[in-house]
Length: 155
Image 1 (cartoon, one colour):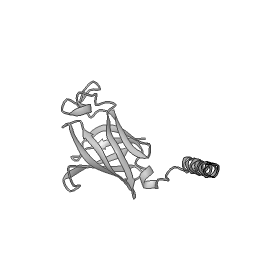
Image 2 (image 1 turned 90 degrees about the vertical axis):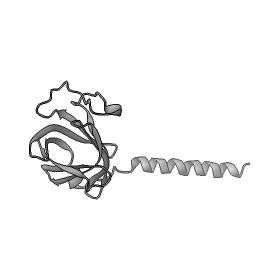
Image 3 (image 1 turned 135 degrees about the horizontal axis):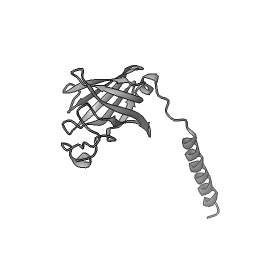
Image 4 (image 1 turned 120 degrees about the vertical axis):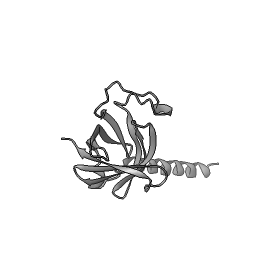
């Protein structure tokens, strides 16, 4: 028993040191294109008309987006009556409609986006064209079956 105690203590110290080194590891560095996706955006619909406004932010290494202004023709009290699940009858203003995008190369991928206009949830991909232009593609199944919106950065 005396010979196993030092081995056990050494194993515990090794595990503790490993945990401390993981906790001290620097956060993943994002490329400038990935960082450019964070900000305050004016949604421009595929027909060129202005949509709502969205703030994008990073939480736990993933990109999310929240509606900060509803599209023209809507009021701040409008709810997503066409949505299902947790989004059903949720206020559109303040809704976190972009969720869980993770970095892959210079793109944010494998997230979901809820379109409050039709209530549908899509898979999505987001990428920065430049520091003031963002593209968001929502699709069902494969990216070929979807639509892309261009967003412009608000100052």
